[in-house]
Image (cartoon, rainbow, N blue to C red; front, side, top):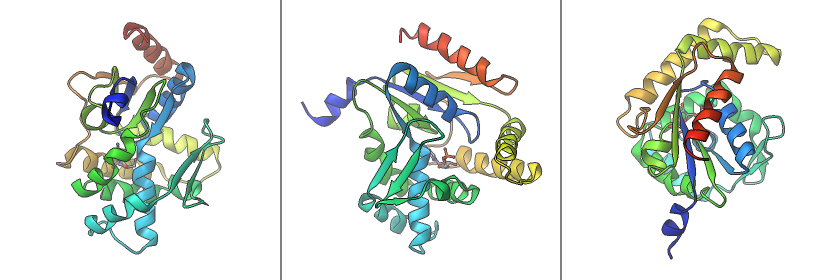
Length: 231
Ligand code: C5P
């Protein structure tokens, strides 16, 4: 059996949606609840964006950015938000990855088909027994179209910016709600309007609008959907 055929028998849950909608919380919860692996695909785009930035290669040179991907030795450590760390070529880049600037650069390079192609197999390699919970924008549409359950989380931009603002305030980081809201809208616009793997729900995805839901209510809804999918 080849690798692709073997991988296909391992179940995947795809969780897609825009920035700041709570995919991280949901996918961490699912991975822990089921004892499955987790893929944070956005981290791969951020890692590549950071590597390109450090090499002085801008988003306007997507082929040169894509060419960096195969050479990056990436290691994810930890399981909860508190103990997670990302090492690239042995160097801890966790803090740099979380910066808003890195997110913005990632969304620029992610619009290029060459960059998306360079990261495709790398994402599929995370599919290992007993299962995978995949967090991203195109998990259900492009990377794992045969996922057993596809969730698309959505919430209006202002609600997402406000959640981010509250998270930053908890960490004593000063941020302007107006700036955060503008960033969220700009990133949404880029992610939804690009031609390569735009942010859209798969036709067989369950769309959950979390705008006026608490975190606990979101998880209750996800738990119900797990049950209906027989998981
Ligand atoms: O999810 P996160 O905010 O870390 O992703 C950073 C950027 O990477 C997103 O704004 C999006 O443009 C891009 N991305 C993507 N496809 C994915 C995951 C992330 O295009 N599957």
